[in-house]
Length: 210
Image (cartoon, rainbow, N blue to C red; front, side):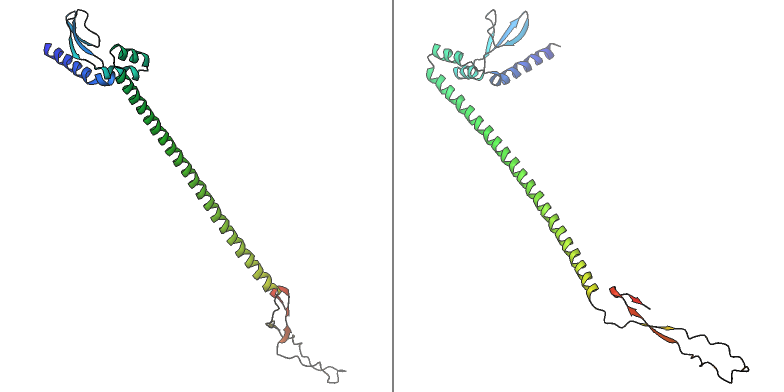
């Protein structure tokens, strides 16, 4: 059980040391309080603790600047006569902020350009589709107009083919009776066995009436 507790404490110390630069590059003390081992960024109350990591002046100034505490960073530098280091860290931080702002502006501009290009492409595709539909409708209308013109032209043309003839049935032959008195042998003209020719009449529009 004691070995497990010691392992956990060593792991906590390692994690604290690893996260120290990211957390603000602060001092790390190993203290024993009430028989318990603890790690803190403040000196131990009884002064018997162990300093595991001591932040240098650059880390302290950067930490103040990162937290927006510029006045504290300046006072810290002045108290240790580190005005040149303070100005250097201020310039470095300002440069980093300017570079980040420029990257953000470039990314925003690129995103805006991509959005505008996508919108223009969508408008171009829409215009092309509308033009294709318009051309198709015009072609269909032209074909229909041509068909109508051809039909009207056919109706206006004279018909040169002769109308067909209708051959009707022959006249019915009356029954032949014997001569009666008073007829003196006179009879109606004989009925022909040949069909009678009835010519047909051509009507407008190519129609025929027989």
